[in-house]
Image 1 (cartoon, rainbow, N blue to C red):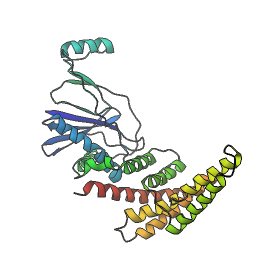
Image 2: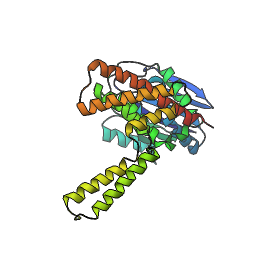
Image 3: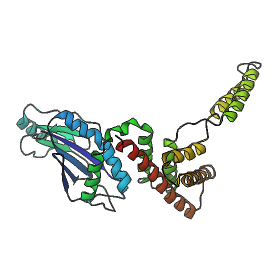
Image 4: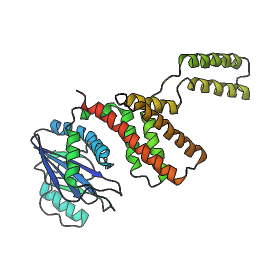
Length: 322
């Protein structure tokens, strides 16, 4: 039998309670517990290593559920580490005792990095290398956290998350919101999450036709000036800018993103307008460097609601479809 072990950290202003939680799902025993500064998700009962590897592939969706449902931005290394088994466990324990200066009781089959994901034989006698303590403030009961994690694992399309890299980037930015100390950074990170999801779209045909005509005129002028002159450099820069301008502005992309992602909702148009308002506040903050404190706090709260809704909709559509 095989065991999967995943350790993860939570932000300093949130925590999952320290008491152990356990569930039985599909013949597996899944446990969530606290080990030093890490929470550890332990799944036992796999009959083969490929079966355990498939479980590990689902954990990213599992942690995403924890983020979207509980606002807990768990940070985990999901790259499976290589577990090297000692040929003589008794001698290994003696050698470890000497090198660490601490008495290691009993045989040791292997030693692993407790902060990294691992798949190993359940009968293995392991020792873990882990770090120290962290400060925490608010709490989510461990049984609730485990229920959310398991629900994410059981999603029909939990493996598909890796198929949408833009969503992964947007989720990482949303997770960063929970760890940023600056109010300004929290707001900008939320808006960046929407920008990461937005796709390049072209302006209307008439506008694109006009830009391409201007680009052709610039090309004609380029052929009349000395190649390494300032005029040539300026015209070349102008032509590049005209080509870029064929695509919609980021502001317009964000609006279209909301209309697309929330197309099935009756308030999609209103939410698209809200996204534009928030993006305009982002522009004010970036270009002028200041928003009144109350305005920034309100904008951040509004942005969090919108970003969470869009991410949750996109995640659900990706992982719940057949």
